[in-house]
Image 1: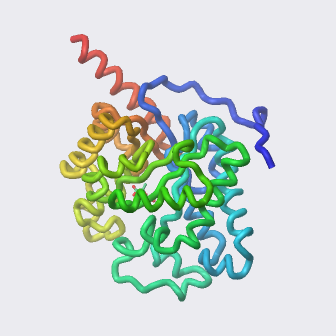
Image 2: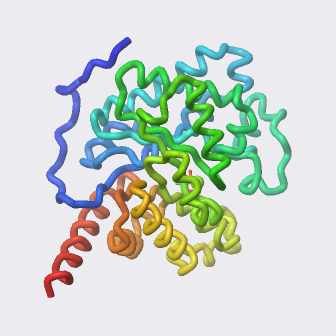
Image 3: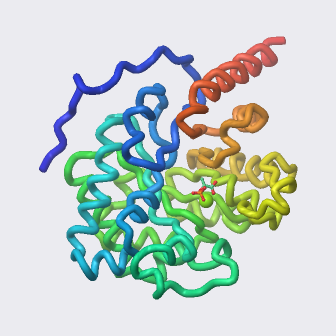
Length: 311
Ligand code: PEP
Ligand code: MG
């Protein structure tokens, strides 16, 4: 079934400042797609699929056991498709599944989840996907079908990679699923110090982009649990160590012609926006409610840069 554009149904794009740095929006629930598109964002910088999966009420394994592989793939296709359609032809960066074991445990079938002392340091993101390729291939199959339907605005993003080995394995699974990495836009999240420090080696695998997940990058750089209120005062995305990792990564990526982006919560902080625009980030992706402010902050900062350069 091919996509049919629904031009009339789309809300009018509001007047927004033109900026060299793209401003995109994060979407976590497919139902929010219309509201997200109405912000005038240049695309979706992060579409999380955790909600689509967790709302099935069963772990993927249990869901497939009860309803079959096709039904699982269709759930993913339908959820992603709604967003890809709403934004077409603006790009929609879809991240593969990244739920920690403690979230899966609350679902039917969750009793089979491994018990972990530190779920945030454990079995999640690309680690889990690479460890269970027979399950991961359903997500890739969903991507393949969307491309086949004509949603060429869909981009593939892998979470929590550490090094080139992770990236190469993910790319090979993409290939095995019938997706040509040369023809599609794909990339990874920078969420661990290892991935920031190793970006050059990772880029050799043919990445088109990287996106800073500052929620995790901050947690892992500062060893501050993002969900622990006892250390919440120490959770600082603007910490010099975090900014150095981000700044150095952007510089390396610029030399390698790899696009850079941010999709963590820090994207809506004015100081982070100023820092990123100065470093030359390609795009900034913020939550729906923050998009307007980020658009204007980016504009202000770009103008400031121009004025500085002629002074
Ligand atoms: C992040 O880590 O900054 C991120 C965007 O991913 P999540 O919040 O889903 O872990
Ligand atoms: Mg993350």
